Length: 543
Image 1: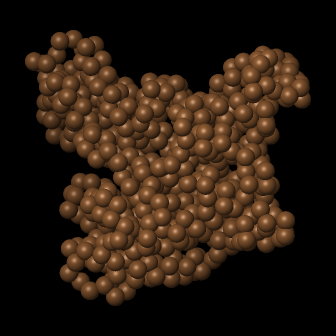
Image 2: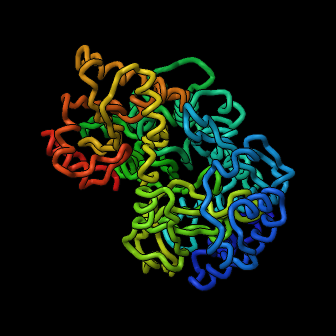
Image 3: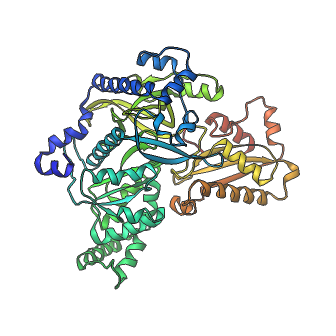
C-alpha cells in the first residue's frame, strides 16, 4: 500500500511503525536482522560469478559462515570491482541490476564509479527515504506532518547520481509537488535548479526542503535579493498572487523594524528540512537561523544507498538495519593501515562500538548488492548508545569527514595525493615537498590548504608560483564537478589557499629528527610542530 493510501486509511501510529519502527529495536533485535540479511546476501553473493571470482582470488579458506567471511575475506575498495562494474556486467552480479548509479571516483586517474541497484535494493531505499521524510517533519516520537500534495524544494543532483533516485522513489509512495519539476530539473545546472525552485516556492509555498547543506546556505543567503526581484516583477508566468505579495510586504516591514535582511523563515513555514552531503555541521546553525527549523541530516551514498537519518532531536544518526551490514574500523587501526598499507585493520560490529570513538565505515550491501566488506571512505564518531530523548537503545553517530587521505570540500571535491601530484607535475614547477590539509576559516567554512616548497631553480616569483598552482588546481576541481565555478560563491570563501614555504624549509626540518607531515591531512601534532617551525599559524583540521 502506498503512503498516499496509508494516510487515508491508517492512523499515524501505524504508519510510523511501518517506516520508523526500527528505532524501537533492541540492540539484540537489530543484530538479529543484520545477521539474517547478511547470511542471505552472502549466499547470493558467493553463488554469483563476481563472488566466486573474488573468493577464489582473495582467500584460500572455505567460507561457510558469516564469522568465516569476516575472518578470512579481506576488506575491499572500488578497484576490486571496477573491471566488472564499469563494464556493467550485470550477469556476474548477485541480482539483476535495475539501474546503475554514478559518482566521482578520483579525477584525473579514475573519473567515475558505477554502482548497480537491484529491485530489492530500490525497495529498501524507497522505504528508508520515506522514513527520513517522516523523521524530518517529526517533533516527537510517533508524530509526523506529511500530506499528499506537499511541495518539496529539491536541491540535489538528478540521475545518474544517487540523489536522483529520491524523487522517483518518493513518487511511488506519495504525490509531492517538486520545485522545480523533476524532468525540468534534470536539464538544468546545479545552481540553476536551486534558484528556479526558490522562485517557484515564492508562488506555491514550500513545505519540505532537501538539499546539500553548503548549497542550501548559499541559496538561502541570496533569498532576500531573489525575493525583491520577484516581488517587483509585474509580468511573466511566475507572477505572485496578491496574498504572497502581501506576506512579502509584511515580512519586509518586520525586517526593517529589526534592522536585518529578509530571511526564508519570514516567507515560508517549513514542515521538514533535510540536508545531505559533507561539512553540514559548518552550516546547520546558520540554516536554522535562516529557516527557523534545524535541518535533519540524511546519510546516503552511491554504493550503500540510504543508510540512516537523524530524528526529531537532531542528536545523532541512526543506521537503518536493512540497507547494509555495518562494520567499523577503529581509528587506531586506520592509522596503522595508513602507515603500513599491508596492515590488515580489524573491525567491530555496531553492537561493539564505543561512545566517543571514531571509526571508518565498512559496508556489505544487502538485498543483492555487489559490494562486500567495502571501505566507503567515510569516518563516523559514535556519540552514545541509546538516547532518553529519542527513547532508543541503538548507537548514535555523527558524520566526521572522509578518511584522512581524501580532502572533500562541501561535497564538491574529492582530492587525493595522486590528484595533487598530477597537478603539480602539469604545472612544470619543481617541488621539494608538499602537504595538503582541510582547514576551516574564522567563519567555520572549509577550504583546502596546500603547503609547498618550490625548488630554487623553479622559482621566478613567489606570487607567480602561487597563482599558477591555484589556476591548475582550479582546473582540476572543475574536471571533478561541472559546477565548480559556483563553488567560491556557494562557500562564501576561496576554497583553495596556497602557502609557498621558503627554500630549504624541509631540509632544515629533517635535521630536527621529526617525521615530515604526511602528504594529505597530516596528524594534528605533526602539522602543529611543522608550522611552528616555519613560523606559520596553526589552523585546525577535522581530525
